[in-house]
Length: 181
Length: 197
Image (cartoon, rainbow over the protein chains, first blue to last red):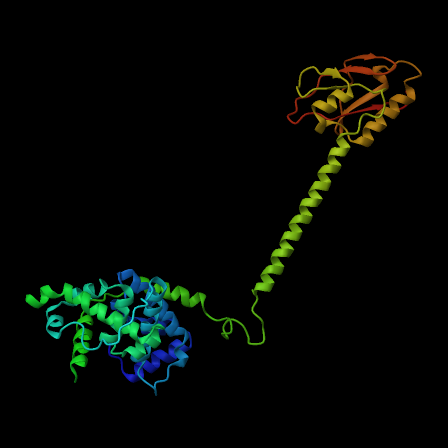
């Protein structure tokens, strides 16, 4: 997947000319990366296809806005995939009106994460309620703080904290078996 | 690196181990959307000074034009049908009519009168003007003496039939009995007065 800067620039230029071959190459190069970003936001594999279809269309339509001087293409594409994922979740679920004053720190203990396989971790994340799942991903995987999450999701900061606390509670109950193992 | 950062790295690394096989089907889906969504302002599609062909307004105007044309055609068909019916509804010109021998069978014809034939097989009857010609012809010589077979000729479409085999003529009408050639689509008769009679 690692492309050189020159290769990336070549792909971008081809895509800007609406060259289907360049677009397909960009898709093939970034598909696994995008899928890894997208999967924790989904509940089923077909959800990921819907999100990525939408995300890649946005990528190709807005590629002229990409500025290599401001950041890498990976970061730019990741932002689009996350936005597409959040749009997908917004269409399907609502965020609670509950708020919480304090919710910081890690949600899943490092020792537990190390014991989990990739698929087990994904399944545990997918068992969270969708809104809570989104907040968990943004906070624990993407590294956003509650203010940033609240801005992205259009919710209160306290609501973001409540969802993170909810994620911690639910995951702690289910992941006990991995702690004792 | 803080504990949270390390936790984030662990989660990210773990999730990046998920197997992701190539997905050509998804590319086909995206490709189709890209082709459909190609903006009309692209140079390959239209010059910048030319408006797109299929705007909403153009589509609406086209639809209205098609609908109007359809209505006009239906109206013309309705008028034509009405005209055709009115022609068929015109009764025979006079009571003194020349009888016509007619049948759709190729055997000996059964003599019948014109109105009856109109009702049975209207599509085989002569046109309006031709009926009038026949009636006028009969009117002209009927008062003089009873009709005889030699007074008239019978033609089928453009060909002249053999003379009627038998006749039964009165002052008002003449009954003809003829043997008709075999024909699949029926017969069309025209009865005319012979010259000199």
